[in-house]
Image: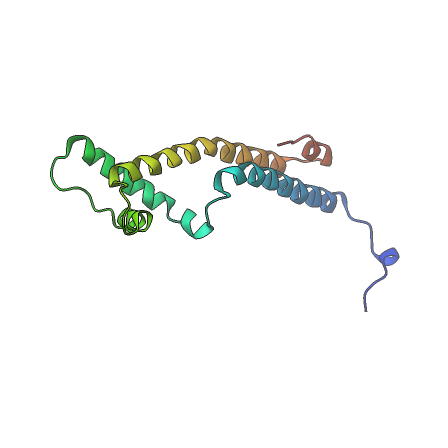
Length: 139
């Protein structure tokens, strides 16, 4: 049996503030995600999970490519990606793939400024002591 709404006590100021903070953080996170969507919309999440490894392999390969001292670094992830991209008759080289990976990595690195902004705004919301202070925080 549920208690009728007229019998429930009104929320305290602390409860209202907590609710407003939660709603504002969701609003900030939703705005952040909306801004990220154009960058990631074409990439499945499972692929996104390999980006740091792809970038590390690409950096190592490009550093080796510049002076070609010794053996090339191991690039197991990029080798598999390149095999899939080239199929039976493709001509893309490891160097070209690495340049593409680094270009994407740079674009996503630039986006991290928005990550920092999101974190700053969430911190402001969490530190707010009034509903009014929460309400002035905007993406």
